[in-house]
Length: 165
Image 1 (cartoon, rainbow, N blue to C red):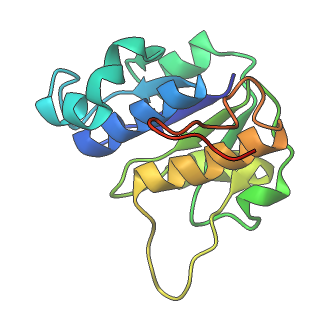
Image 2: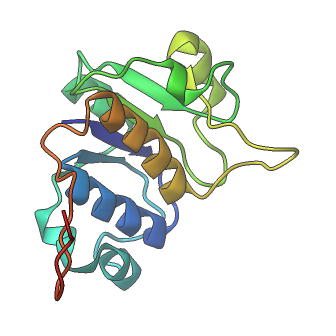
């Protein structure tokens, strides 16, 4: 089971969508305060649909609290400033993937201490960043793909009709 860490998230809709992705992938979501919204915010719940109560959610007072409660965490830091792309990492179950706040990302003081664990999603031109919930899905699904989507449903069924084979 992977772990997604959001450092000081600001937009409730993104956090709700990320929570929904975490439920769909049996991934834990870790939120590090300060949050730019209340967890009771209707946008969080709306974007998370009726899955929010199924979310494995952990909330921390600050980054020191997170590190103290997860002392052995193997953390990858998703940042536009990284020198390698997210697909060049061999992810293991129970790894943590941290994403920074929408407006600033992860502070550079954290990044320089963890240079070898920083990963980037390739982008064209002068684009600052992708939407946070999209970024989480991209990196998380690469980690899951490397595990052959272990324990996830790989095949779907039609509701009214049937596939031929």
